[in-house]
Length: 440
Ligand SMILES: Cc1cc2nc3c(=O)[nH]c(=O)nc-3n(C[C@H](O)[C@H](O)[C@H](O)COP(=O)(O)O)c2cc1C
Ligand code: SF4
Ligand code: SF4
Image 1 (cartoon, rainbow, N blue to C red):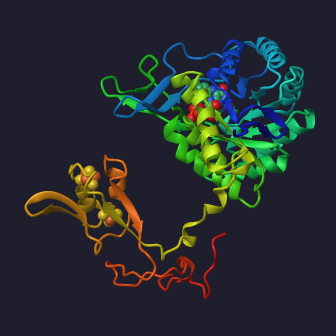
Image 2 (image 1 turned 90 degrees about the vertical axis):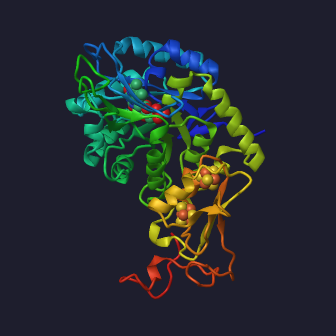
């Protein structure tokens, strides 16, 4: 049986599934129920500095995007950091950690970008005996207007400075949570590393307006007729998060830095993908908010079953395995040639593949044979783009088939070779080199 135990920068948990800092980790009541359900760890909802509690809106906080079956695909929120009293949070953190010593309990913090503010809060958190801290440099709304959250995360110099203070004034492991609302996520990641961070976590939410009410002309969620941009999360953001995680994992300057992967993790598969792209564990928010804490049961059993099937005894066995397969476009093999193939037994003759290919691709799918509806790929026109695969409503009905070396590509008339060739030496490349450069 696969061993799911995780050791993330020295913080141990029985599995790599942590709840991200958000409403599910807002108070002891939630966190204890989450631990009972099986979550390996939590990052407590972000704490602010001592003083009058934060004020949230008293109306709707969420906007959403749904699929055709009303399944939640993306969630947008305008919630701020915790609006509960600091001392109460600290007492509950201490109590929960004492009751659940085998689970990871990390505390998220966001205070003004001033040395004294960080110096004041760090010993208070340390006193709870929490396992570590996560620096919230990500919230794109509300707090950023006050010079915190994404306002810090978007300036690498500030990120480095605050991480340094945290390492200087605390002995707890530091996880720096990055904002995706930036052009090049490697820059704040490098800054965090230079400041001495133990790990980075990403992504926090993406700046967004999910919809506009066309009767009132108010963005949603609407607070008395007006709205504001909020933070986007859930399944829709997973591709962005995976890409950003991989960028940090393959950057020579941050290679080897521990990464906690966040963004749209809903199933064990999502988690395995983050781990394969270099994350050491994953954090989950929207999936727990949509389906409840028990969703972790399927994540645990699904990941363990897959690991058993593939012969991975521990998380380390496959963590980071996909990183070496992420490359730049210029290194992709231009001699890899594929053609679409339609399984006539599965085809329901809806015609979507034909329309997509005819109107927007390469006019490579015929729609008629002997006066009847019949959809077939013409190899002499097909460029192998796979658009038809993605629009076909029947799974596995259209597959991409790689041409064997030695066969002829009917579209170009050229013989397929097994020799690797990429853009760096292509005759059409004005900057071409003499010898082919292997992928990094
Ligand atoms: C309602 C809500 C509140 C959140 N509050 C915080 C917060 O206080 N601190 C923080 O670091 N991230 C916060 N987040 C961001 C989540 O921790 C997480 O980074 C993001 O939702 C992406 O993960 P997901 O796609 O699994 O939801 C919040 C997210 C939501 C939906
Ligand atoms: S792979 Fe692209 S070009 Fe080929 S049939 Fe499908 S849509 Fe057309
Ligand atoms: S989209 Fe799929 S099911 Fe529909 S006609 Fe094309 S191959 Fe057949």
